Amino acid sequence: VHGGACVLDPSMRALRRLGAIDEEWLDVLVAAPAWAIEHLEVVLNDERAIELLRDATNLPALRELWLSGELCEQAARELPKATWWPHLARLAVSDRDIDGAGSWQKRHHDLGVPWLAIQQAYTDPTDALGWELAFGPDGACEATLRGFSPHATFAELAKMVAHVVPFEPTLVASDYYAPASSDLTLLRNA
Image (cartoon, rainbow, N blue to C red; front, top):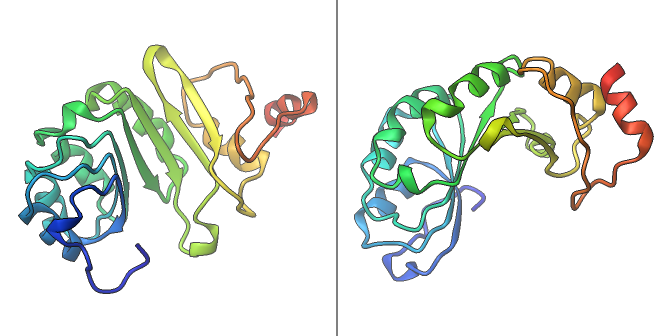
């Protein structure tokens, strides 16, 4: 979804992925019968959007929730009360402050989701993709290059990693990246 008027209709209940949606779309979403949505992206710039999402009882298949906007912190306090929250496998939040990665890491266990991912938010939509730092079970920490961005450098990743509990990084291939032996050295020295 790339902005504009809401075209969501209850007859579209077989949707598996939806986003990024705002409050207008959430009004329609919560008023419909149960959805098959597994992956939902929501922009939170209004407290009412948090309330609508928290009170939704029609998202039994929801496994991945990606949050962006000004109210991610507040949402992290309210959304664990939702009936669908215990079924989440991954929560991803955009944070404008890379220093926030450490505070999110500390909250991972309290949020009760297996994977908590932090993405650095940028105001320019062409820079929206880049590094994502995710905290998982047993202290796992995963850095993933989600897509091209001029900000997705090893120096940028090193800044994000500097604010989390120390760990020995292991680099693995993704759809966008094939590690070289020199990369780990670059990351450690960045």
